[in-house]
Image 1 (cartoon, one colour):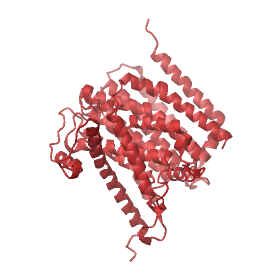
Image 2 (cartoon, helix red, strand yellow; image 1 turned 180 degrees about the vertical axis):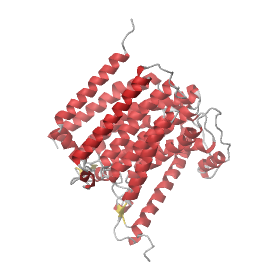
Image 3 (spheres, rainbow over the protein chains, first blue to last red; image 1 turned 135 degrees about the vertical axis):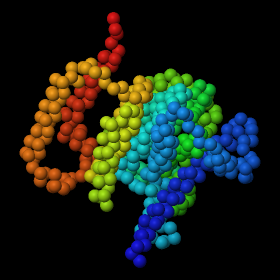
Image 4 (cartoon, rainbow over the protein chains, first blue to last red; image 1 turned 60 degrees about the vertical axis):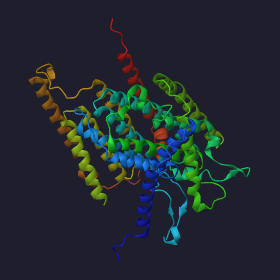
Amino acid sequence: MSWVPAPEIIAKLGLIFVVFNMLVLSAAFMVWMERKVCAYIQDRSGPNRVGFEGVLQPFADVIKLLFKEQLKPKAADTILFAIAPIVSTAAAFAAFSVVPFGTEVNPFGLLEHPIPLEITDVNVAVLVIFAITSMGIYGIVLAGWSSNSKYSLLGGLRSAAQMISYELSYGLAMVAVIMMAGSLSLRDIVINQSGTWFGFIPRWYIFLQPLGFLIYLIAGVAETNRAPFDFPEAEQELVAGYHTEYSSMSFAMFFLAEYINMVTVSAVATSLYLGGWLGPILPDWLGWVWFLVKVFLILFFYVWMRWTLPRYRYDQLMEFGWKWLLPVAVLNLFVTAALVLWVG
Amino acid sequence: MDVLAFYVFGAIAVIASLLVVGQGNPMHSVMLLIVSFGALAGLYVLLDAPFTAVTQIIVYAGAIMVLFLFVVMLLNVPREEPAPPNVSALLGPTGMRLGVVLSLLLGAEILWALGRVGIGWFTQGSSEKSVSSVALIGSGIFLRHAFAFEATSVLILVAMIGAVVLARREHS
């Protein structure tokens, strides 16, 4: 029976399968939630025909998109035009691989050792997320350039400029947390947040790093190109930005990537500031329920913000990023460093 | 397994780097260079240096190549133009002869250096301490090599200021 792989490997593969499908499903759920919340904010009912309250609407959309014709501009760069959505989606999926979403579990006692609920625990996890996110930019830039259309090109350029500008503040906010935890592994950072102050306030980093959390949230919105920072696809100016020329499933892939990126940014925020899977009442092995609740709340906040705030002007975005957010992030970093050094 | 991964990453790095030079379209060159950097990062992981690998991706493949892309996109050169004949002295017969001499000198230098360290240096195996620990790298940079590190950053700052001054010079 030596050809049967070890149960650990089967468990790991099962975990990868579950995470991959959960990400796809979460994107579908986000599409539905976005349309529903938007509808209620605008005093409409939103999708309510396919399935109960329209929950099956995203699946109907996907089926429709699958059967649409795949179009390509005549002067487009064939190879890069085809690669761009793949790069976007692959980067979005890959970034989630280092996010932990639960403690160690042993499903039904089948394994010799319990396995941690995450795909892989790298000792430089935060940097890995950072690296993969920066690869995601290429998908958008390539889509913009290879379409050979002025709207796409402008959308791609804007997106690259925006992501580079906000990545700095995003990273600096993370560094402050890393200094407090003394580790780059997201699992260690979450474990460092266990326990309570005075018996009822959880030791989450959001209470020690309120400014950092705010910076992270704002920069995260800019990183994922969401309103009020959705310049790459500002529809009133740029038709649809970088994916103007995309149709059918390749368009859907950009959409999928955008929603998965949102989920990843929220999941990382949960791990860095909100104590990850830690929470009261539920037993340890159900920690992932807390994780899902926290991620959902951040995602809801994103959607709420998108349908409440108007879009900024492009120069306002750049000015805010460089002249306000970055200096505040640097200041936050210095204060944190000094406190960690003196107070410990 | 490690050996197989080494050959795969190595082959990707070499082939992608060769293709970078052979492309007519600068955009494709940039993309292939990113592929090559990615393969290099894979090699660093095999060398037990995940921090170096991730830094390679963030700094080179992420930050610097985005700047390259910007330049290529803004200039929007679809095809590299063939060099006009004899526009530069370097492309003339004298320049070419000089180039041959220089490359021969470089080859001789490499051979001399290899002869000095001896071939055994390469087959020693990995060094006693891997550089996977971020804390080790940090204390190395900021304690042991603090002067060299700060001097380098000043040098880069000077280069940046120089670039800004040159770019903003008014044409009177």
